Length: 526
Image: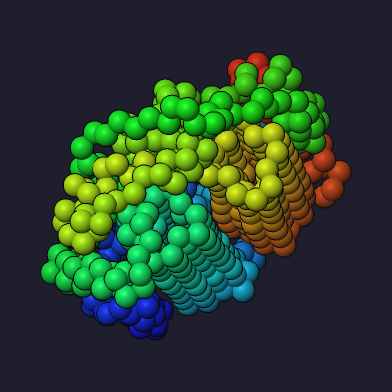
């Protein structure tokens, strides 16, 4: 039923985006999946059922079961005091209890297949890391989407196919880094644009080919020709080239922004707020702060997230930062610009009338060489004091982080939505005072947890919901004062928690790392 409903919606989406149907959704599985974030694909050791999970970091040797097979009400006997004396002992004693889960979804959700880390969504297939959406397939990372296929990083978008970081956009195809756009194709760096093909780094364009606005009828004729070429290619080959693949074929082209008042050096930023937040968060979690500065813990905080990487600007060799996800790291290194540089270049670079008339998908790489430069520093809304950050909206006081929305006081993080005072995290929504909290929704004061919802004051959780004051729990709901899936009296739990947190703090302080994490604890091998 899920696939049939999605197939009907996919056909309708193709009519809206391409003007015609191209075939059934599953015929295009390989193409739709290409370039998206990696997912863990495994099978349940309980039933052999095929499963997916979002994070690609799970250590080999862990046991797996499907979300539907988890008995959240199962009770276990408490561990002995000796089994809870340190993390190594807990890991040994709980191995029969710790099953990683695939195909996880939370909240008010339904009609979800071969997908994981989904919350409050309906009709989802082969998709990971999304929430508050409907009709999604072969996509990764997003929120509040409708009818999105083969996309990575789409947010608040609808009827989009093969788009990357499309924000509040609709009826688009191969739109990269587009915001508030409608019916845009093979374009990048657009804001508030409608009906554009092969346009780059521009605002408020309408009926444009190669950054040149055309009379509506002339644009319509070229658009229909190009859409027919795309549709025919898809029907025959079951794929179409990505914008990245087209740009990689462009011949080298040197640009100059000499004389332009372009601020290529970012404004000075301060780490003070981030450092204070890191001390405060570690104090909340371990009872003692992790001192010496956040950068002393950089390798540990970064190991399961995506930290921006330094690149050189094509305009003047100044330093830029690029987020290593969704193939951004594979953009041509000689075609990267800051946001300010891209805006200046996009205002002047235009395709000739002759090139616009003769443009095809097959020869596009020959026509767009002077245009195809990529803004890799998207900043949307009101932002303040961002240090080495990239792809940000309405955020402040963040450091070495990317893909941030409405977040503050975060460091060494990736894909944060509505978060604060969090560090080394990958993909949490509405999360506060957390370290190493991944693919979770609505957490506070958590350490080393993933694939959870509404958990608080807890450590080493996987696939848990509404769990408080607990440690080393997999697949439990509505519990408190648990260790290894077993409930303890409040006094005993408090004593065990204090000892284990002291051990964690001591090891991290001395070694700037902790050998155990949520991705290896289930295998029993650090």
